[in-house]
Length: 340
Image (cartoon, rainbow, N blue to C red; front, side, top):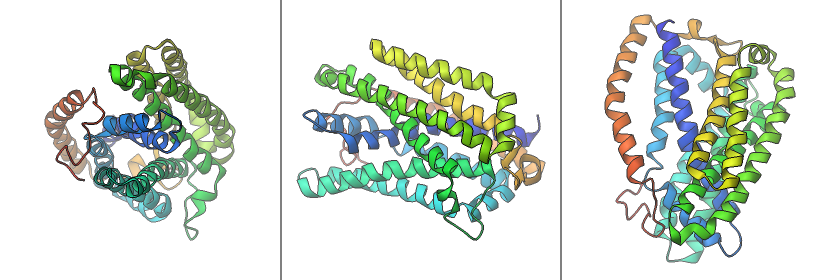
């Protein structure tokens, strides 16, 4: 394994962390938008409690991947940055707007009008970001980049279904995570049945969209599809086991184990795509070898990453551990001393 290959593996690890942590945050925004009925206020309060104050920390993983791509594979970064501007700007807008709306909704909690407006913006942006990232990922697999038509990735059936699949996966993760959070405290246990139904519904939708993606993969991304059939079947099987296990565990009310199974399902999909994508970073435009920075640069970056992780991982673990059992009503970002 070359230094460039090792950096790619580390980047996929970072993407996995972002999908499992930041992805669940995005899904929470979708459920905030769809909250209805007598439990709607309680669901929104639980979602806010589950997000704050760690929602910004989850984006560390995305920043890490972007910096690694820029520093380790500058040619690929240039291709991605110049040809996928529309979906990437969409993702950036979603991330920034949802963060701002999340904070300002807390400040407007005493006024129904402003709070409702910021709440809708938070929810809408939480859908826009994962959808845009899914569209961008599909474009990397097809190699059908924007060129002179910046909106081309948004007109591809594979891109659109890929974006919807990403939204459904984040919704599934969020619902499973929220089931565990709701079951952890007597005051929120009445929310569990509704969240359980949402988790099961999101799992079904994600499964249907995954099946719809397969023929589109062979039609629009044949290079990746062939590798997928040769390399990724074990990972897909692992993902299926995780997904079915998560559904069964949610149904049985074993939510802590369901979280692990849901993470396995999502991680299997992500690694299956990454294995099939290799050695291309952008199919037909940039490979790991062709886009790599000089070996000495990548080796220095690997050393810096190793040193940084010694400090970063324990700090993040302590943060997540500290806020692993949210208490609705005591979570607003302004009260946590961090306004974005």
